[in-house]
Amino acid sequence: MDKEVSLAFRHLLDLARAAYNKNINMFSDFLSVREVAVLKRQAADLPGGRFFLFGGLDDAERVMACFPALYEEREDIKFPISCIEIQVKSAKFEQNSLTHRDFLGAILGLGIDRKLLGDIYLITENNKAVKAFIFCNEKIENFLIKELIQVGRHQVGCIAVSADEALVVRKIEDRYGTVSSLRLDVVIGEVFNLSRSKVKDLIDKEKVAVNACAVIQGHYQVKPSDIISVRGFGKFIFYEILGHTKKEKIQIHLGKYC
Image (cartoon, rainbow, N blue to C red; front, side, top):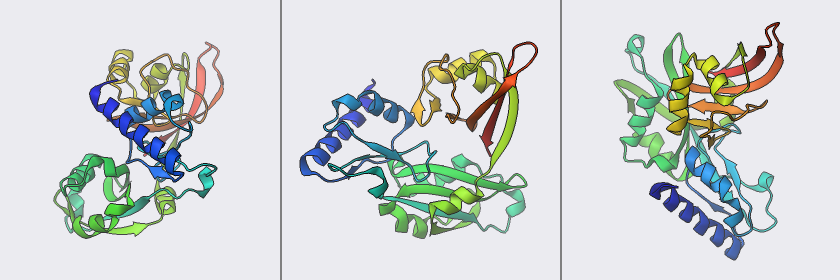
């Protein structure tokens, strides 16, 4: 565990102790996949041993942790998370080539700390960004709506919306393929057309997450409903095994987030 992640876990441990001693819900900032992995590994060290994770949508990658009060159940807890819709309004729309990084850079440029921001979902039409949804700590909702007026060279407008609106417009494209095994590195290579060595490098650099938790072993066996993200390439959900070919290849069905 490196120094940065170690400090982050110590803070989470302090939150868990406060929740246990005061019998109140305590919430973290948004956690990275590495921090989530450490939290899950060290769960036995937490007073009470309980925590819940949520990032605005059930399949979010960046999530908050809630250390609950005694007897508090997940369905009764409201995480302090807001969803902001960012609409591109620029008259130069035909030149629009905005990326996820552009939206994140514009928001960080306002002086907002990354730990207050969750996932960003980019919505495109005809390969042009038309809007984005970002989940954030509710305490910066009003500031973000008021101050974020430009992304790249494009004018934007922001409004608070329900998470359901992001869920409705987000696209997941059905994909099919064949793999020699259900090893994580093999499946990723098939989905993103990457060599085994390239996938190994991404895994070694902790750029691969399964179910919002960093994975550092390529031999992990992918299971139905696993959500796999590869930083810089995208995210997909593994749906099912469809069968086997005559050469004993495994036929798979997945959904790639667009």
